[in-house]
Image 1 (cartoon, rainbow, N blue to C red):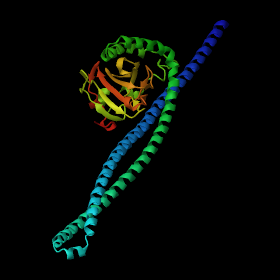
Image 2: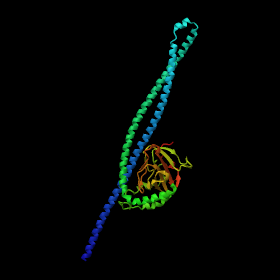
Image 3: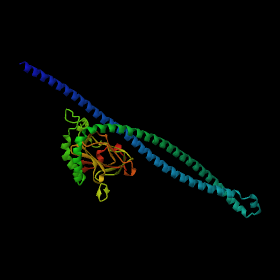
Image 4: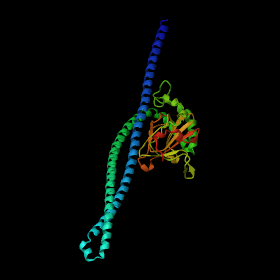
Length: 376
């Protein structure tokens, strides 16, 4: 009897200890999930600020180029005006040197002298008019040069601000990468499978179809630390991911700040563009168009570095042409969260985006917010 009571007491103590451990793990998991969610929100905010600086820098660079071109034209016009004025002044000077005595000694020259006086009378108002026009255009040129100086100063400050925001975002991304390493061992096996799939896929459609078949494996990933619902904070979706992308038509975030240079259906080579191309600034920040899960990240065919994000309900966004990938397979991202950056070579800074539904390309333009990119 005493032995049974002793065993019962020991079991009760073990159960009590396990419950305390469970409560502690649940609290740790909750804190980790909240920290991961806050990090995602901080990343979205930092990327948004950085993109505002990129947009302002692009606007200022365009404005400066326009002002420089306008100033060049104005300088050429001024040079032409000066040439015309010099010719008029030279003619006036020659006419003014005809001596009066010469006219008196040679009466036949009287008619010429009268004509000269008449011509001088016409020249003087013309010279005055040309001088006034020249004065006004000099004033316009001075205003242009002042505007150029101001815009260059603003651009300098904007680029300094952009650098600071890039550093802040880089720090946050480093933090996310450190947290993502917790899942690296398990993700390595999946990454190898994805690389094999990419190698065998003959087209983007085939790649997306194959990735859909892999979705079950990604959802069953159990990286450490493990939370009560069997997902790590890094891979756990935020509540906003549960809103269907189908309800977001016209409100998706443009993945990059820049001008659309190719539209859906435009001819390109022997075929047609199945998405859009955006000309960005060098090293431009690329963000997720909407909440979703990264299902592919790496090189693919002639697309360069390719990122595929699953948004649920059969929708995927594909981002290609990136230089640096800032997200990992299996990771959940929010709309506007940084996922990569473009090349520092301006000539290569072209982002290609596709939107696919059930593997078929759809025109992404009607889905994207028109306030976040300029048109051709």
